[in-house]
Length: 437
Image (cartoon, rainbow, N blue to C red; front, side, top):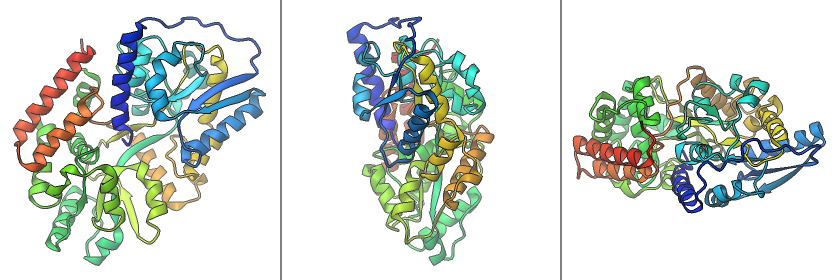
């Protein structure tokens, strides 16, 4: 996801803070609720002109109208929340509700330290689990060790993200190539581009793009038990098994065939995206967070998108989550605000602003391409097909995956060696985190 590197750093910073401050088990328990509050403090770090920023501004407006309680909104930078979350949440300066990062190393860590409120009662009261269900719910639930996917509710999302294949239709038309709908069709299309001297896939190995493609290929062969073992430490990961071997071998084959440039080892995500936007490459496999930008920056190009062909699972997850700090004395009001962010009015506004809401009505979305995006994501949710991200299991795995894939693309390490390298890094990270029984 676009914040992957920040998630990694957040886990390390929070762990350092907890170690320094000795906060284990410091949750305040039954924090007294303030009687007849007149204000509520809300923090998030979304841009005002972004889909989430617009939607949540509307949610604050509706909240004030409904409750008569004034919102004291403070926009914090991602880094401010990342660096200071543990200290702030253990103080009287904590907000009453705030946006926070999903995953074991972030929300899971704070939940395990008693700094986030258990939301089970509010989930029951507002029936949030009817809108936030399946794999969307996994990022809001954490067990006593802070491992996501089971246990109690500590966060609620109201938007999502997945990874799709973007296609430049103008380039396909130029070479008389059909937009593929199957994996065989995708490979045929890539070969035709190569035959015409065009590298088909815009890729970057310095950041997330290639590891997302690698994980998509893993997911196309992976069982539910494999994903649970990999992401939630429920069982052992077979690193030399069918799914990982197929994905890693396929990346090597696509490099050898010229579908992926050998020169992409130092390419960052922004450069890979620019390569698609400027028409150098006809395909780009990346997140729905690019969607709005392509709409605004590719007005003279004809482009489309689709989920990866011939797979039951796709790379993606919920968006970030709303959490209620344990020290808040206005938890009931905080829960009311969260509920409003899931309302039809707010969800539909997010969709019409280029976001990917989880509970919008596609018929209320005016832009046809955005409607198509939401309908596509709703289809993914209906199939419970979100397969998360490959770097989530450990705080260092993001850079380690990129390093291993760079060696694969460079040809300095073979498929088996790359998988052994990944296994070693994964096992060390999981052991250091102490999250596996």
